[in-house]
Length: 109
Ligand code: 2BA
Image (tube, rainbow, N blue to C red; front, side):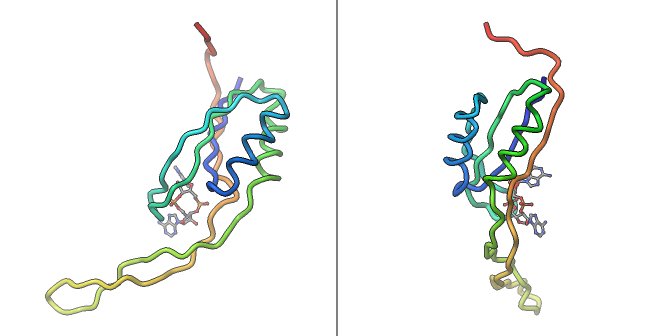
C-alpha cells in the first residue's frame, strides 16, 4: 500500500477530491499554507493499493493545472538603516507536488 501526499492549489482541490471519490479513492483534505508564497494551498492524503497508484497519479496530473502567481520578495534599499522594499516576482505554481510513501501497516480500529 502507498500513501500519496499531494499538495495542490485551492482552485483545483474541489474538482480533484470529487474526481478521486468518483473513482473510488478515499481522501483526506487538509488546509495548508505554502512556506514561500505564504498563501493557502490544499494537501490531500490518499491511501491506495499499489495497483491503483498510477491511476491516482494520472487523475492528479489531469486535474491540477499550473498557474503563474505574483510573490513579493523584499529588496534592500541599501544604506546602513537596513530598509527593504517589496519587489514583485512571478512564480509558476503547481500542477501538484506529490510524495509517494510506502505504508508498512494500514489499520482501522
Ligand atoms: P510555496 O512554498 O508557497 O511555493 C509556491 C511556489 O513558489 C512553488 O511552486 C515554486 O514555484 C515557488 N518557490 C518555492 N520556493 C521557492 C524559492 N525558494 N525560490 C523561488 N521560488 C520558489 P511549487 O513548486 O509548485 O510548490 C507549491 C507548493 O507545494 C509550495 O508552496 C509548498 O507548499 C509545497 N511544496 C513544494 N515543494 C515542497 C517540498 N519539497 N516539501 C514540502 N512542500 C513542498
